[in-house]
Length: 226
Image (cartoon, rainbow, N blue to C red; front, side, top):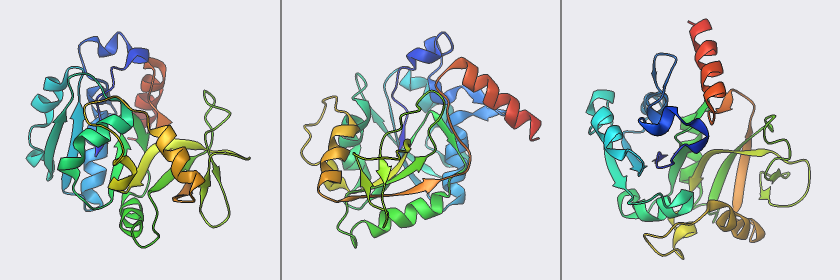
């Protein structure tokens, strides 16, 4: 699942007429980078949610056939936030663990490894597997601690930042009502307290493309890389 329902307030005025995942960077829409990398890792069934200017996303990406995937759309009348959006899409996602990616990050993570992590959740009796990254300048305090053995904790130090990429068991969202906004962090903290969240440290490229300045910087980097 690619999360694409956010309003993109910090990215205004660029997002007044274009949903943030469709903003161009390196010659293609930000969300297209995700789709192409997911396809290369063997993902062919995608779910994308949307709210703000959602019709623009559907017009641009269609059913996904142009990218070698099949896209199922999960529209939201108003954005349900991360956990609420995933809960609303559960009928499309099915009963097996799945991978979720924030539509407004740029990352060179190994999506095939994340897929393997999703497949291992049942065997580990776990509810989530998170990709954590070094703390960026705009979020120096981090989010969670990655302990020995790969378990993730809400407490302790040193802390890393949650990348917005993770694998989840549908049971993590079972208690949420549908059509209702809900944040992901409280669910994760409860699961961490029960020892049911694992993770890994990604040391490659990761950028939270949350402002016009970061978008322009990434665009220059990709242009320079050819």
